[in-house]
Image (tube, rainbow, N blue to C red; front, top):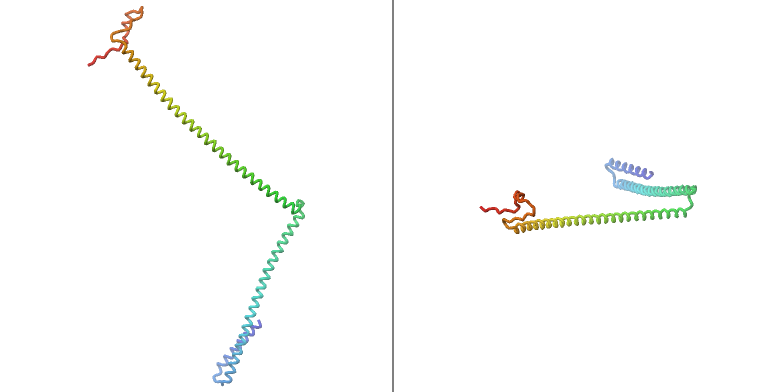
Length: 220
């Protein structure tokens, strides 16, 4: 603040000297030289004051940096203090907990929980493998059943075709044999001849019966 006051006073004096120099129209060389030296001295004082202000600003900046560093350190100390209080509270709760048996027991319980989790994970994996095995076995059974069903249907179809073919050939053979036997009977019977009636048969009855011998059809 003092440096600023000095700077203001020096600038005011320099301004007065310049105004006085303007008002004086005719001066001798010695007086002019003296005034120039006085102005130069005023300028030097202004420079000194300016340098002092700059130094003061640097010191102020350094002080601000120190204040900022102190605030950061205070923040770190507060964080440490909060952690200490939290740990103290946790320790106090453990000490007043009747079920707490010490850090060693806590480690054992933690290991036991980890073993239980690992065993549960293995059981889950085993159940998943069993499920996949059952699904694969069920799929194989369905495929085998489907194969058997298709094979049975194919066998039944082949059996039906063979039965129909055998029945058709049998009927054709029977009809051909019956027709051939009928033709042979007709050929063996001479035209105009008839079987002799058995003894005791009335001829009138024989005449009244129609003849079973085929008659020749006259050609036109």
